[in-house]
Amino acid sequence: MSHCIDNSVMPGREKHAHSAFTLVELLVAITVLALISVVLAQMLSATSQTWISGQARANNFTKGRAMMDLLTRDLQGGVYRSDLPAFPAGTVGFYTERPGYSGASPTRNLSWVQYDLGLSSNTVLQRADLAETWASTAPPAFGNTAAPLGATPRDTAPGIVGFKVQFIYPDGSISTNYVATNRPKVAAVGLAVVDDKSLKLLKAEKIESLRNGFSNSATGTNSIKADWEKYLKNDLAWDAYPKSLSSGLKIFERYVSLP
Image (cartoon, helix red, strand yellow):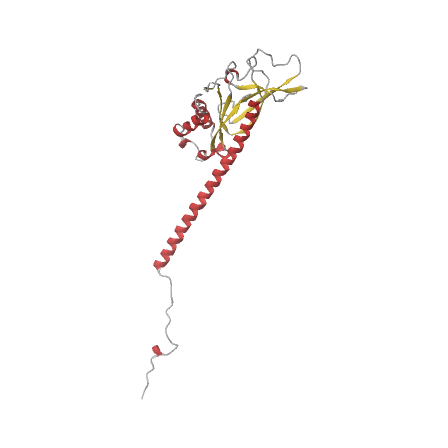
């Protein structure tokens, strides 16, 4: 009698199926990996942009604050008399009780200082000063309201594309004109500053256009900062400038009490 043995039911001899990824599972995995990569790339880009914007703001703040502090010290130490020159012909120049640069000796704590942005494509605000000596023939000559000559200009911070000084008078009126017989109580100083990275991307004609825009948009009857921010919002063609300018351009304004 023959015996047939069915191996399929023998203990320990069960067949094991080998598992493997199907094509659908591979496609799903690749899709998920691609989505994760896109999200990580967007996060990295956003972080990088935030870092760049932060650097631009820090750079602007450093330059803006340094220039405002220098202007404040000069303005608060100014000598404003009707028989001495102060802001002649619309220039930002006046006598101040601070010693200036001079090859002559001895000097005294009095000097003529003057701020100017120079040519229309310049971006460095210059401060010129002229020390007064103790010589009897030396200026200032009382009664002469013309600006003295011979002041030595020196560069300050780069990236200045807007510079304006306005005066607030006792009756509350605001004007870009200085009237010595009606001494203003406060000087409003406005600065438009571009960070160093954006400045390198600006061509001369774009710098000139920016400077003209800031110069022409300060009405003299309103806050300098308010006028300039309105100009940036409504009139500046942002598409014609580097994208970094949107975060690299900062407006500063400070009100300085005059002695």
